[in-house]
Length: 222
Image 1 (tube, one colour):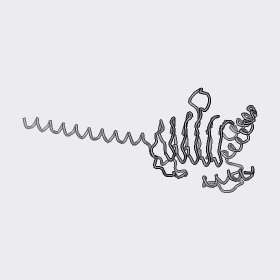
Image 2: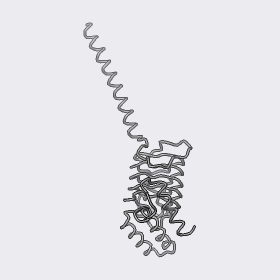
Image 3: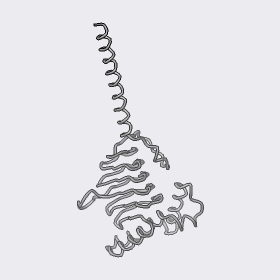
């Protein structure tokens, strides 16, 4: 695909994903996620030629202007959409497939000083919601979602939804998950567990009250 066609494809993704986008000139000039992806392609080209210093300089300049840090070694597929983008960090050995959506504050990082493949692989059509941290050499499956604020340390199967700290799979139905902006509507397993505990406490209180009533009746009969 030619350079101009690739840029237009990137802008078309913005119109598909962001209802606030109005014109191509607005998207071209004002969308930091788009600028970060374009800068990364240039930096990655230098990185593959082992011109690491130039690649890193381009990456840092892009970080300064966009607030998005993408290591020049990361491998990124087509039609990546970074919404807003401030605070997004993508590590050196990350591999991102096609049609992936990433929201602000997301970290695709490592867990320490390990060598080799130490950052996540995000497969096609995945969505990583606001503030999520995906850490280590793990895989986010195709058509899967990571809920806002989640911390994911283990592989996520295809067609799954993960939420919580640590991340837990809460949906896995084998059907493609819609890639929309409703990432705030995902279920919270921690809240559900707390609700279950509260219900058990209420039942125990009722049992205790019944026992107290029985003891009072027994004392009265005596």
